[in-house]
Image 1 (tube, helix red, strand yellow):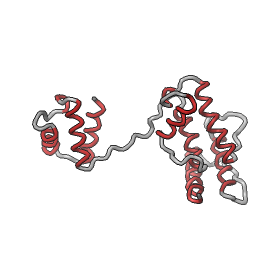
Image 2 (cartoon, rainbow, N blue to C red; image 1 turned 90 degrees about the vertical axis):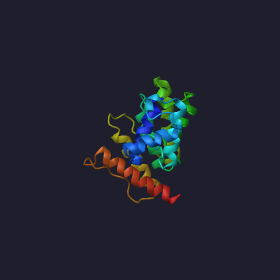
Image 3 (tube, rainbow, N blue to C red; image 1 turned 45 degrees about the vertical axis):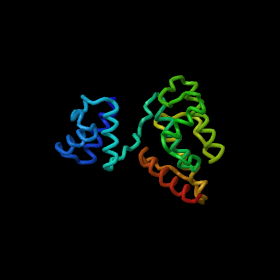
Image 4 (cartoon, one colour; image 1 turned 180 degrees about the vertical axis):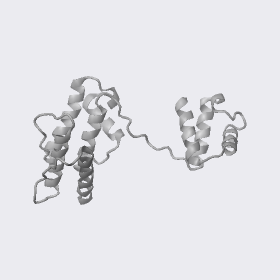
Length: 191
């Protein structure tokens, strides 16, 4: 139950509890049974968390949970689909559900086989090509720059801009991401 202990420490910090107030909370939540997390049962730890939530602590979903061999690639494509207005829910949970539908594997972190990863990647790319007109580069690029430019070009077409997108070599990868996010907001706002 180390996850609960970690969460309690996060909650204590967010609630800005003094040492005395924290010990009182532990004592009260466990009905006087313990003032040390290590001495608590799993149920008592959950009682402490419940009391902290009652005091206003809100557990935030962790981002960046996708750590597997293909997690970053899946997430980048998923967020591109979101920026094109195809995905309504950009959360990692929605992406994980998509990966499971494509592969039968319950979590994107568990995708290890290149064929399974290709199934997810190609499904996302085909969806974006068919529904948003993304013209993917023929040759893979190591930094993904050409793919980002392809997404921006499709966004320009979706927004009806008169001039096609022309990339500037001065744009960093992070700047391209900002352009994609900004145009994505315009696309979603127009729907």
